[in-house]
Length: 440
Image (tube, rainbow, N blue to C red; front, side, top):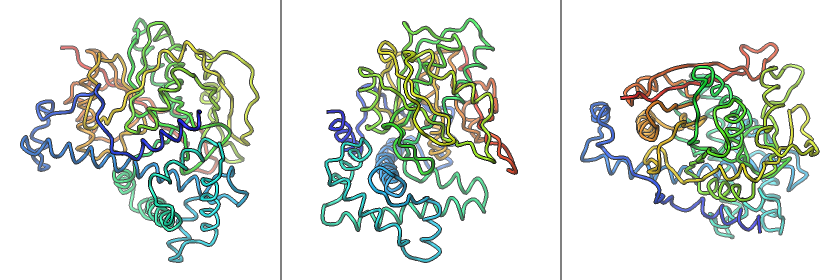
């Protein structure tokens, strides 16, 4: 029955997104501080509603496109449906555009993938992609359709790795603002949030957080790099956030509500199930240690502690993941009762329930252009209580002006190191920023 639900969720993900009954659509009147900026971009009071409709429809297209991106990455890399050698997407993209034709190792993998989805395999990723392919492509044209999707996805990878990188960071950013909406998530994102919450606790030791919104918690399905198949697809961030809040003393389990709000119906379906059937999380670091890559001690310590506040303490076999930090955490049943799931396109709408003490948005803001970012931050600000905190890791300079105009005062920035690279230009780092909503 679990796999049937996964398949049903996949079908839902390719449908046009419908606004939730729990959301309120953004209006021109919500954006008074930005009217002049919007008008300079050709968006007026008369055209605003149609602009929002266009963004909502385009985001539905991007959700579907993101799902198909994951399909191609899975078909190229998975070791669960074939013994053929995995194909690194960036190398495959380079071979495609260097030679002008699909590399010879790709068609056999696509054939093996199509054979797998026509089989009764109960592998959860195969089940998901089976439903996606069935709903997206006619049976007679599937191989041709996947060839076309492969070319589309490789075009993005090639442009990112071999064209935009040469032009500079802004060219890479422009690519992300037009690509499909990925559901990628990783354990490292939890470390960034944990670091930010530690800063918040130091600034305000007596503070108690009861209502939390996570925008775009995502689902680990089939990323472009570091595909790990040790366990089924999981949404790590809600559990990592609950664990961090309890660990640093900002929350108590009995009165904590964490809302996971995602634009992808597949993610929502997963979180709804997780509330009543909390998972055993297979946690594997996205970064593998090697002779040149060394995990930072603070991150290693975080990984060792991760799950102690939400897990049942059981000793379970550690998954095999050479070079990666790994562990299994079985979430306690009462922890699941803290989790609520809502469908939300943060650019075009906001949740209409009670406001939040804390809103977290990591690794989603790069997908928005400056206008969409403006709308998203306005929605976020409107959902915070006075004095509430917005935590994110988007370093785009324009965000500082947008947050200030939205009543979100910048408070702290911290850079966290995840790993060092011998001979590299710089260590692998991320940033976390905190803004506090002004109290009128």
